[in-house]
Length: 111
Length: 120
Image (cartoon, rainbow over all chains, first blue to last red):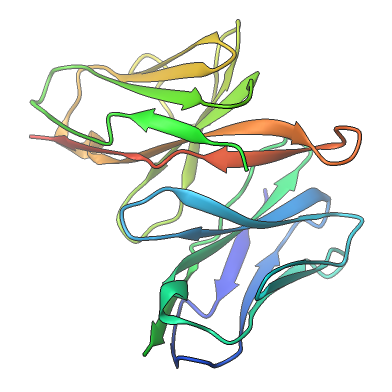
């Protein structure tokens, strides 16, 4: 059974800082991994999808890396802004095509 | 990216009544949709996989007779919470998967905005 851990659970940083969110998963037999953001009381917004054959994906100030063999992924956010404040979730997708979610990292970027 | 809508966005109902939640893929067809439930400060838990034209597949511990799922078309799946009780109060989120990538090589999931259910 896939288990996903995200560290840290919460993070508070001043505006402008670069930061790294960590995700680890127990079953490395995945097809891809998605990073999402969730604002309070809202649904999920897909940020990045990394296929198992890829090592990283970039979108604007976001960069996600994947080390499938060690069961790890990181989300790098450059030059953080208050609008980046949200909960960030990672979700690997295995052979069943189901996403398994971690509990997320709650990010607060202070002006 | 693809857009998924849910209706209603929030609903309050009395204990013992039934509530229907709709999930629509607006600009793509989805043969498969997923229903999740999220309790406060918890992660999303998959309830069931909804397949167009066939019965839904429920996760272990989810009562299929209580959470009725119908996927009648390629753009619509519904979740009906029957005989709702206060413990069913939660945030329900659906997602739809779209075949994407070069040559349609993999699926990406897109999520709806969620439905807040409160049972009094």
